[in-house]
Image 1 (cartoon, rainbow over the protein chains, first blue to last red):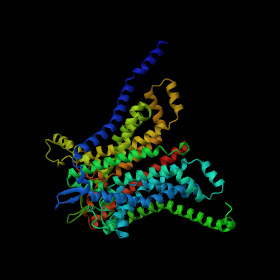
Image 2: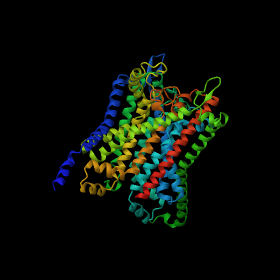
Image 3: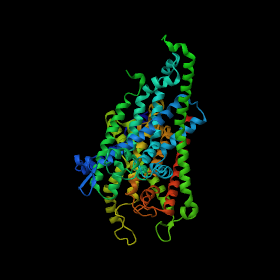
Image 4: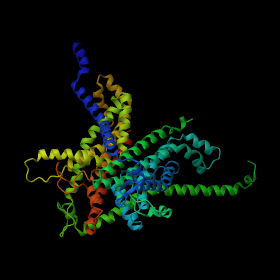
Length: 293
Length: 311
């Protein structure tokens, strides 16, 4: 009997347990420390560069300015055009997979390729975009070519989030709508899509994050232009010009050892990442349709 | 509802079925976009990557060890580049996966709720930070440290080429940080999916919490953790911008303090000025990377399928 009591009292004193607890706590604190380190260092080095002039001027040796206004505009164009292309396709694809297709080979093929797309690294998208959009379709180094490349890249994000949201819509919503005589398209348009809106929004917000943070896929497709358009017409034709987003400019500044600009952009990017994270949290709160009031 | 339209039910019906069919068709086209994209990416990677394999020779490219693309007698051997990618990825996974899985254990099993509420958002933010920022910090923080180490380690060496700290170790450290969020999120989901009764049964027969975690919960979550590892491998082997400046700028055998080129960084740093055969070989490197990635994807879908059956 005493032996058993001993082993029970020993249970709390196992050394290997304590070592593993220490390792677990160390690992967990590491992620937090890395994040804190990145944020503190970037703000420490970059905060001094970020001022009004940094946002409103472009790089110019003549005027001695070193701003990123052109890159901000390019980034906005890139986000807008990419979403314009990929959102409808992604949502359509999710609707087909969830509402129309019958399980089988075709669905498996579509789901496998969507998975594959999300696993392909951005540098491969960059090479593909360079050969297909820039050369074969003669778009050259342009914002349009970059945006088309990114549209393929963010497609799985939108498809998957929309699909998740559609799956969360209770089956009796569909039955109810069809039961009172709505056609399928009418049901999708008036019942499913509004109910799935938070999920779709999550996909879009995550895509914005991906587009803003992307560099490898854009370096060889959208190029590195950093000027602002001079006329209104120039604003329209700008999509055919080369244009580097903030992240591409960060990479270029870094490789030219212009660390002030690089850290300034890094501060801006971190703030954007932070906002995007907050937004996804906010939207995630509305996703569960059945609980929404 | 008794208006004029109700008299033309038939006409209305015809219109409606037309709209229905059109909607069905359009959604189907959207869904096939992903299929078309993957096929055209595969097609274009092959037609732009394959020519150099024939003009230079498969053996010369894949088993050649000298990379002198711009010399008068250019040599396009990328064996060291392939090896660097493999060694770098394996090392990054060996460092990143244990830390990631332990963090996942912390979040799912050990952490008090308040602390988990700090760690979890931190991991999510890490996942969102653009890779160039990792590169920027690697270049300005890791590389100087590595340079100091290098000066100490190779103090008396006469053959070592000093790299200024841009070496394989720096790249591996950056990569292992970058795969952390992926590994943590997926392992955490896997651990949380383990049925609670298994855990309670183990605790009830007298195992400690730690024994239960490592002998019962983690083995039960193994297919999820395998998924995390495979995704980590995919992320590490495909990463370009974070390590392109951190890893150095010459092609060498992947030794810790050597300046090295990865498959990805070779493309990023040379595509801008490459011409002719040099450019073709860079596309061949892209094709090799693509083959690696497709293999990883297929392994991944196998694991996922197996996991489904086990359930």
